[in-house]
Amino acid sequence: MYAIVQMGGRQWRVEPGTKLEINRLPLEVGAQHTVEQVLFARDGEQVSVGKPFVAGASVVCEVTEHKLGPKVISFHYRRRENWRKKRGFRASLTRLVVKSISVGGRVVEAEAPKPRTVTAPKPKPAAAPKVVAKKTTAAKPAATTKAKTATKPAAAKKPARKKTDK
Image (cartoon, rainbow, N blue to C red):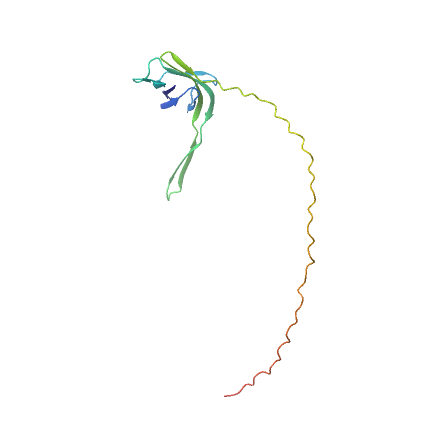
C-alpha cells in the first residue's frame, strides 16, 4: 500500500517505513504526527482518489530527529565595480518515519525491523609458526674490469706547412 500526501507545501509518495525530510515541524523527537491531507491511496487493486483529499484517510508518522540541511551559498557580484555579496543558508528540517497508513478503515503498519542476533565470532585455529627459509643467492662472479686491448701507436706528426707570400 502507498499514498500520496501533502506536507509543507510539497507532495510525497509514502509507504510504511518511508523516511522523509520535511521543513521543521514544532514537535518533539519521538512525537507522533498525523497527516490528514491524503491526495491518493492505493492498496493492491483498490485505488482511492481524493477531491481534493481522500475522506477518512490518514498517515501516521514519527519524528526521529531535527537537523539542518546542506549549506546553500548565494553569491552576487557586479562586474567592474568591486561589489560582492556572499550569504549562506541551511534549512531547518525534521526527519519523519511513516509508521502506518489507514484508508477506509484498513490500516497498514510498517514492519518491525528484524532483530539481529549477534553471535560471538568463531575463534580462529592457532596457526603454526611459519618457518621462513633464508633465500640463498647464487654467487655472482667477481666484477671484471675492462682489459686494455692493444692500441695502435699514434700517427707520426707532420711538420707544419710553410706560408707562402703571394
